[in-house]
Length: 190
Ligand code: ADP
Image (cartoon, rainbow, N blue to C red; front, side, top):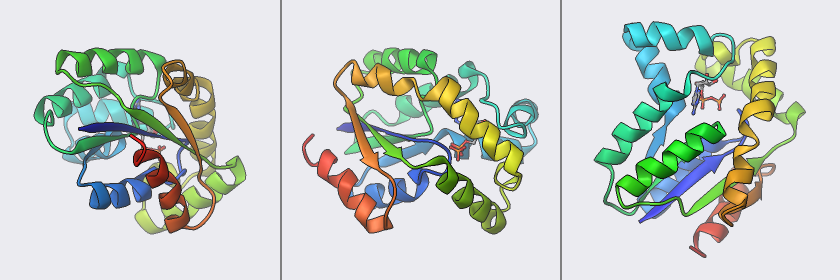
């Protein structure tokens, strides 16, 4: 069982590549962003709370996503492996994630980090906003705030995995299949 953290700034292509990895390796997948959007859509009290953060491009409180992941891990202890997309996004989340996995006899095998220049990210996200109607992709100020939040709070999570020799950086610019090939090269060494 391989547990893969797919990492990178908003717009780096995590969702696109996750879909291809799931198909090739028969992995299960959780995207905290998807779970959060479903919660918002449901109109629940929790949905209303998290929307007040996502609307501004801020991270939702750590405990909300930690609970989502704890619940997911409990239900996915067996199988070929899992892709964690959009989590962990703070060092605290990474530490709690290790505890959750260890309690279930599991561990992270690798963090695959997609790198893409800022200008390209903004372009991709505005384009996605037009197609998907995602509110946080349609406003350039919100997009820029998400990239700033990534740099201020999330980028350091790479150091956490690098310190454990579990960090691999992947060039996220190029064709979808080209980037996919780069990811597979690393996964095939696990
Ligand atoms: P992005 O394309 O910005 O990476 P996601 O779809 O992963 O977006 O997440 C959308 C929003 O959900 C984020 O901007 C953030 O507010 C919230 N979110 C998702 N994952 C996390 C997390 N691990 N910790 C805190 N907030 C999160």
